[in-house]
Image 1: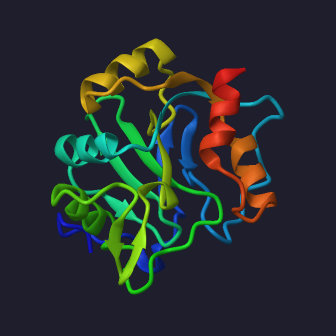
Image 2 (image 1 turned 60 degrees about the vertical axis):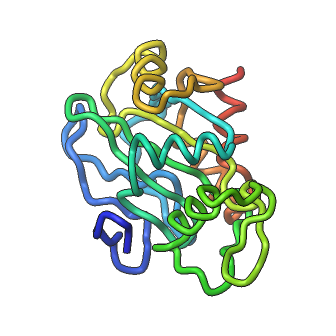
Length: 206
């Protein structure tokens, strides 16, 4: 259970309930979950590009997330952590795990974020976090943070970058337009053994 008392969906699945989008309800299932099946009935072959901001993982990023956004709304078995911010044109924040993520032993996915934050707050080095009787580096858990309009709102990248910077206090390293379908397809084909952050960065840098 998260520190705010909220528990993710049973089993930690990242299948999201339907949410209203610009063209009516849509199923939001991002980032991909282990074993997820992506819908094949896409409305068109033209890619849907969504404004997306990206940060690489650092101890300062974790601290800022904790101080400014609080505990994650949802935590998943594949290591992903989720937050939402803003009431109008809500932003979704996703902390993405590394490729081929392996959870620390004896640490529930509900408790992982809090244990990492506690370790950093007590002065532990980012490459020597004590988790479940093992020592893990922060970079062996998560690779980076993504922020995007939660419900498909048509935000310009510059607007997203400004709003995300105001919310987090750290300017994104990359910001632009991303086709999430191609990222999800690549992740699924590789059975989770590719980096979502690198796939996103490749699009944002092109």
